[in-house]
Amino acid sequence: MSANHDGGSGFHELSFKLGRNTEGLENLSRLFQQHCEDDDQRHVENVKLLTDNNAAITALAAALAPISANYTLNKKRLAMLATVGFSILIGLSWAAEAGMKWAVGWVLKIKFGGP
Image 1: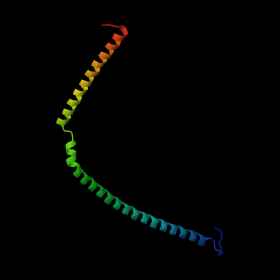
Image 2: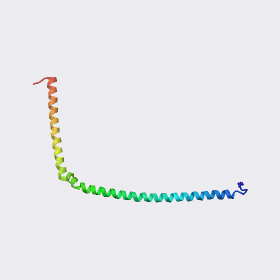
Image 3: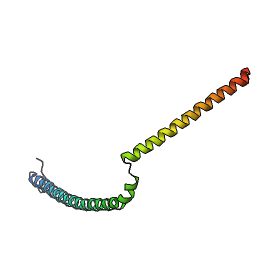
Image 4: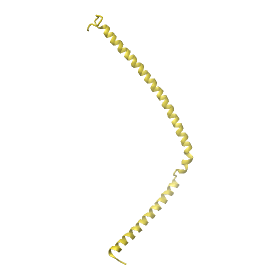
């Protein structure tokens, strides 16, 4: 090893570097411990916020239950809506068919003549 400023064989410099590394590790350990404490604190805050959020959602669901009960589809209401919808669809298709027959007949009458 090379000689240092005090004329020694470099043990002083090696000891100084090891001391600085130890100090850096202590600082790193302290920073990691602080990070863990901050993380634990954030976890506690997040759990409290989620608990409050769940309570608010439960209260909102309880408040909306009477309103939503009127708009839910039971089997009877669904069957009635399907019947009405199907009837409307049949009526519209019948009207479309009659309209197309009339339009085609009118066009053929104009094009080829007829009674």
